[in-house]
Length: 141
Image (spheres, rainbow, N blue to C red):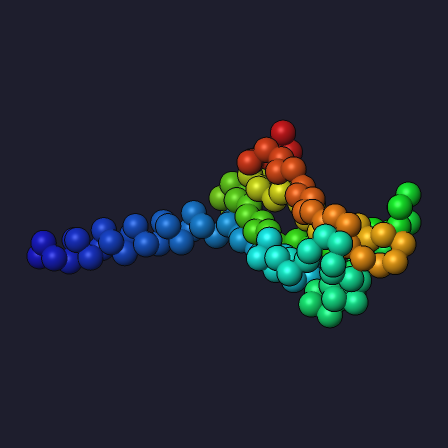
């Protein structure tokens, strides 16, 4: 029967796809609430105060002294980590557990820095973005 061979072929392809993706993992990591330019559009240099910013964004992660006041820093992170372990396929035949991993992370936090004068009024603000590394990092190579 021609229909049963087609179903067997499809079943074989689905089983192979399941075996090949068994070594894959995708994880989403979020630290603090990610901030966008729209979230800080209310900040106006020379008018917005520390109280206004903390009412909208919450307390900063750190406050440090600056030459003309202080800097409040809001750190956040939103990334997706994915990895493929090609060594997973060799486990049934290999006496060792080889890890042949391709991964993409881009670890590093983004930040919003708000510079205040000594009276607590915003003078400047801006985003600091971490630099994205290479797209794939073969490990252990």
